[in-house]
Image 1: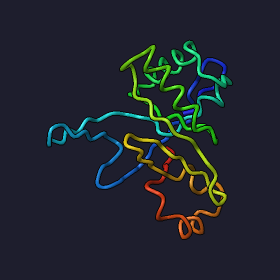
Image 2: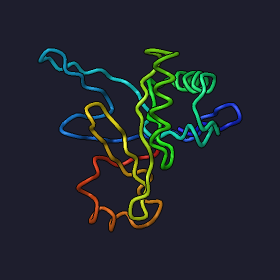
Image 3: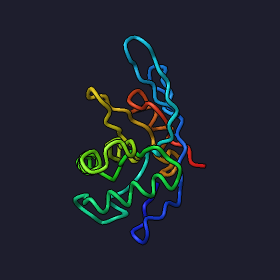
Length: 160
């Protein structure tokens, strides 16, 4: 999701096929007293909120606008994955949890460059990190990248 500064428009949706330890991230699996409950939720796992809004510190009004746009798109949440800005997603989540509890799901993350490819890292509970290739064929070095780093990658972004 790209949030343009002029009105926070969202103009290129992403679809992601992710699998880690048998759990598809098109839904969210939650363990509750030995029972696995599967909840289907829609989350855009590749958004650039800082780059779109220009707010170096997420303010309450900005977070309110982001939440409004996420809901307007029919999504249940987003992963905040600005370039090389790990802390921004955590700060945005803190503001949302404090001022807008349970409105949407926010997963902190960042997009990094790794051997000329862009990789999104999502920071999940219990210090788990989920990595996927963002726009994998953009740089033209994807096959080489997979040979070197493929064992550290859990998914590939597919744009629709």
